[in-house]
Image (cartoon, rainbow, N blue to C red; front, side, top):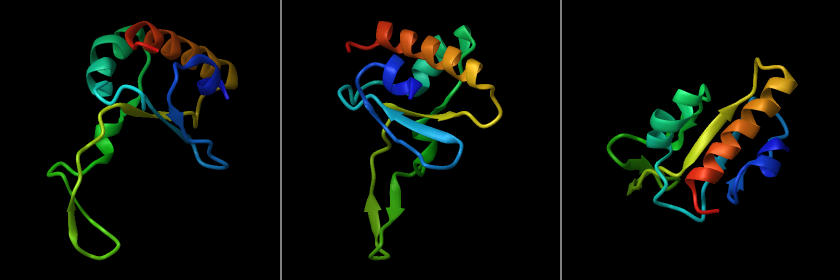
Length: 107
């Protein structure tokens, strides 16, 4: 819920289980989450996994048809983990990250 409240406009998952939320700056496909993480997130003690980490390095995937398909890694998203963090800290971290994203993105 905090992501929807504090983050800029974007797409997010609404998991019914698990420990992760996926968020994407869908209105800014050129946003580089890895660069943002390195230059803004980490210096402000906020850490997430950039979406690029979840794409194959060579840009190919095997589809349901068992054939290779080219895929361009999306760089404008992030996976947020909330498995071992107290609720208050989750809200605090999401609020800070949302504020940093809003000041960086044109939302």
